[in-house]
Image (cartoon, rainbow, N blue to C red; front, side, top):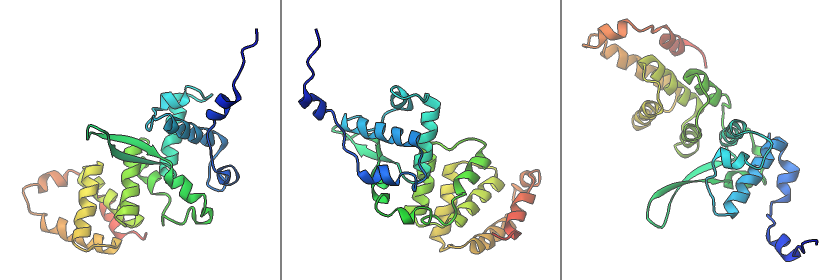
Length: 227
């Protein structure tokens, strides 16, 4: 016996998406696979799961968990997906995906690619760290760019400084950038002068023997190189 299917139930299980998403996703640099992951994120949000894991997202897709994680990273890097921190009923911090950046860009597609002056900044970070960036790390870079209004070139200078100091981690880079901002350093040239002054003043310190063992050619190369 054929089971009766309620059309009301079918309609109830629909999800609504903007037509602009179907007509403009290519202009946003998205593939059909990216689109399906976005739709899954949207679906999970409707089902009150605001932070589905790559495994959960890929469970109904033809791609595996690893590829799904790579797509999530790509969406965050393109500033189309945001990780927000929210407080639950117990006043505990939780994380959630937000597609608001994507919806906003749907109505100003022509501006995509112009927001950040240097789109290679994420690639540079991944090359220095020797691995793909985590969603949190990508979001940190976006915060420096969008919230703190730090130029991409100055962020790269902070990365290079951390490489010199042998402290390649995001907390240290953040300290460098915030210290520069506190001192009114807004350009790469100002950062170069400040770094030269700092290293010159500490040349005869007790840490000098340790710094002699480190290859500083990279540091002085970037100080003298053209951007």
